[in-house]
Figure 1 (cartoon, rainbow, N blue to C red):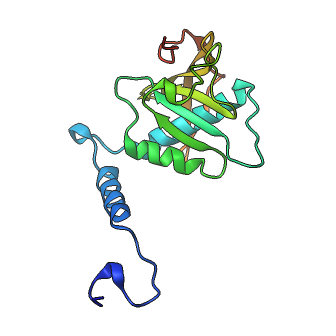
Figure 2: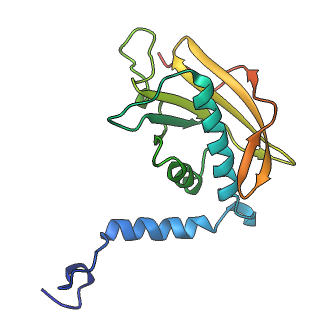
Length: 184
């Protein structure tokens, strides 16, 4: 064993796996970069999504308390832009003690397709989030999927309170679901 090999040191210092170092370095590079030279909106967008998620969970009426495991929130991007990885990381980090957040690409990851009505997996909630559209206020299209015949859509308008905190203005408005459709 070489004493110059950082992965095989003889001291008791903690070691990072090479894949973790690579992933952290990549996230660090992504955190400061945006397309077209736009200012980084990662913190803002994550804070907006977190506010919408909290309201959707409260509004869903689904009991997510489980003393054994964290409830799972499946999140599917509804907008053409998707949800950038750095924003996903911040959203996950914001709920680390409340929920297990899983960003998905396919509805089948969150629903019990073989059961009648294709319900969401037990102890979980499926949420769809559209792109963040910010002018003076932020607007987000969102949806809750409970089963194939029970999908509800909401349009949110949020205002910034400061310190990356966003608040829903006058509750969401009901909108037609567009993204979380059952697949046959």
